[in-house]
Length: 442
Image (cartoon, rainbow, N blue to C red; front, top):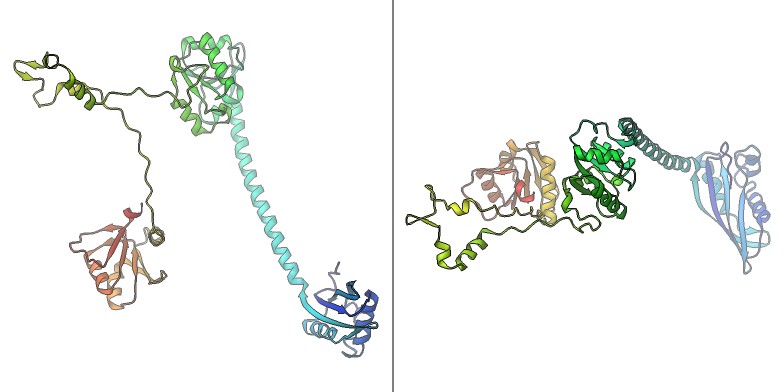
């Protein structure tokens, strides 16, 4: 239904049911006929419709099994009181045509309020779109400026006009990649000494450069990269080999992945071209000192003693250190163990969150038995406030040092948890008080 925005302030919605088959003209006629003279001359439906205070009456009705049901819509530009009276008058209609009928008002809707709701929802959508477009535009501008600078920095080198970084002439070491996009991606990461071979046919320029510079071949992690590497190793003097992760190309890598791949480069003679290792070269296992000592015990005594004694003394220096041990290689450095995350209860997590919120504020919060915050104050006033105004407190979370005085007050008042930043000088720990520090949560 289309409403006239100049005449519609309210919309009366009513439901009609009739014990027989009736049509729209019957319903409209019943509304005009049975309300005529009921509400007085000022609220006569015909006069109000002629003056535009009541809009066109819309009826949607259908019949089934000898009965009819439908909906009535009446737009109104009257005030709230007059519209409500008009709506109530509809319920006095008890017949439509020859059939007994019932009309019940479902609602009187403020059309302007509905419009406001639609306006708010639409405004939210538009604002979200503006913010997204603005953000993407800003990112696009930044990226466009970066790329323009990088494209300006990229140059052509040698008779073959190979794509290269601006430092290719001045650097003692160079990085050989496959294509122009690889050079551009390395420029994004701040690497300006790369040069591209532009295919598997290695140019003479790269071959000549490899004789003078330290060369790292940085290839894709696919079969194409292995073919390029195999060609490079045959016709150029390659010193190191770096590979992109399996299935990745150099032009797709992030800055972090580029740096990681270059840090993990291996000497060319260990590169194993054509058959890359699945998980990188395995470091040689070093013999542990304990194993060496066990091996020496298994040797014949004559062999162990020969050359180990000088003038009846064992081989120890003046400071008593074993000289053999001094010259043993250091045991292989173990990789750092992953940090084990602490499992916190919901209560501990809540206290930790509260402690982080208070960080640097020198304030304290009193937590009630049900977990709600019942008070907040300066830490310097905490002890005096607890003694002057005792209350039912389950825990105290504060940005300060847990002191002996505070622990004694907590034990006296039945406070079970103290959550502070640090532990002060405490000689006596009450059994009823549980202390948590910042270090317990981190």
